[in-house]
Image 1 (tube, helix red, strand yellow):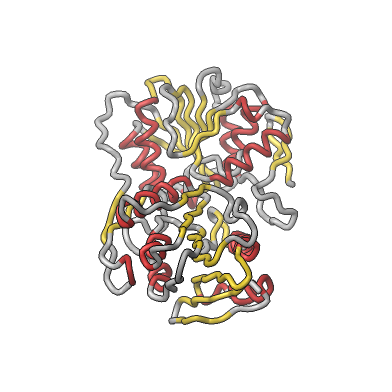
Image 2: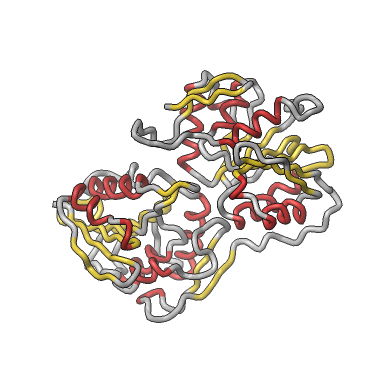
Length: 386
């Protein structure tokens, strides 16, 4: 656990799941810059007596500090893990977690927002969609401040604020972080949000060839099939009988949908920590599997809620980034969770970039790993629960 020291006080904060080996903090310089600004704008502190909404608070640092001072903000996030981190950090700081409204990006936002604080996300599409959803609740007196590291804030970022909310300017950089100041314009003419989007899959990828995929904002490769997933689809197994299959880290659900079509008797579960992803998977499955086919859709921490020894096949294309950091921690947790959930003889099928070396981790966790196929960029690996 690291300690965030600001003019607001000192707070012990962790990411979720908490891991003493985790080298990354639960905040960065952009969070510190925003907290400093709220206390001293140059003309005094920001009035936080109204409805304060914090969007994209990655591990709950902003929400925790504000709640500790009685402001009880509304947090809006696409991340289940961010919500869990926020709950833990609120409890650790002595705040009542129930005093803070924790909303997902799929929930209706507050009808009126007096202070809007935006931690700029990695996905410009997610920022665009969220600003469209929040703009009707913003009024002429709303204080709108965005924050991010310099390398996260681009001209396109500022144009979104300008086009959807109102006139926008940036601050000077401080510790490689920057603030975005936006003045709401209630008379601005907004076009509807372009999200979600749909596209047609190419041929040659098995049961989902030529079918339609739905992507809500923020999903990886939102406008085309990514090449890693395509490689997995080209080698998708066809389990016999009433197998239980999990699409772990499901994204838009194309892999799980393909598995459901390939194995009509299988029970398929889609799991992701992103609310946007699971909503996309539900829409993709509904559009392709038919009205009588059912599946389970879970927003959660990987396989954490899956009974041990209950799964026959896990399909996985794990992420290797956590926001801006490159890390294999998420993949390791996915592999360990899959091992525990698989029945003896059950299989984990993993696609990944060649350079990531997942075979080393799989051999350590499962005691075995088989190369199914490879090309110049990707490997497809199989590990079996013994």
